[in-house]
Image (cartoon, rainbow over the protein chains, first blue to last red):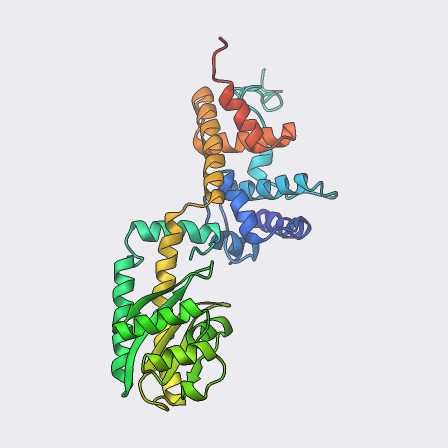
Amino acid sequence: MALGKDEDEQRLRFEEMLRNADLRVEELWLRYFSIGGIAGQFEVEAYIHGAIALPALQRDILAHALNERLDEIHAPDGRASYSRGSEDAGRLHDERPHDDTDRPEEDSGQDD
Amino acid sequence: MAVKLPLADELAAIFARASELLLTDETVSRALELITAAAEAAVPGAAGAGVTLIDADGRKHTASASNTLVEVADARQYDLGQGPCLLAWASGEPVLVSDVRNDHRWQAWASAATELGLRSSVSAPLLTGDSALGAVKLYARDENSFSPATVRLLELFAAQATIFLINAQARESARMISEDLRDALAHREIIAVAKGILMARHGLDEDTAMQDLLMESRRAKRSLRDISVELVSSTQLPR
């Protein structure tokens, strides 16, 4: 199954990082499940091998599960990446409750 | 005879049990009785058939026997700690005894069998993966009652019995929720509660709340669990 470009990049990066983690798929899945992931172990395995796509949020939870493991073992170089949407939505509601108010550039020059 | 299942299998087993896909203990012991009866009926000259089960701690019991002679003969093997069924279980190979009087593998068992009027036997292990659950056996009053063909036949009955036993074990495992599963569920619950707090506090949908938790965990360089625990305790009013 063909994945979108971003998805594929995220997956390849994930696969690479998983190799550093010394973690069996069952253990990875348990961590993923423990932090709220909803895909089954079989699906996670299929995703790692590029056989199926996972929704962005599930990919990010999986990446996070792996990254927490890498943090725990103080792995030196690199972490699994998150989906594009997650990087764009990287704001906290406590700090900026209405993010549609700050678009300063768009209306400039339209005043007159 | 608890089997340690991977968590995903464990969950699947729990749901299978809940929806009655796994056989009950009664069904399994009925199946063993039928297999015992079939084995006895299939082999001319057999004095009886039975199934011995041996658990992880080495405890032995006869789960099914076509008559009391089989039960007594089995009990003698368990008491003596030796005999063809125990060897079949320990070695994972079938054991054919043509004539106990000429078989020097077990002195004590030979005299016990002779006293009971038994001369020959064949035992096949109940094999599952790399371990054995016990053995199926046939006893006979005459020497040379069984051939290599009987051995092959009994192995087939053993394979059939094993299928039922594994099914029963999965049911047993599903009854005992493991510590791993309990921890995982407790962990999930904390995160779910934290998600709910963010949803209520900021009017978010569930996925966005989860994305925010992930973001905060990354930003603060703290685990998702720690972030969640903190959020959950933040709802308590100071006393």
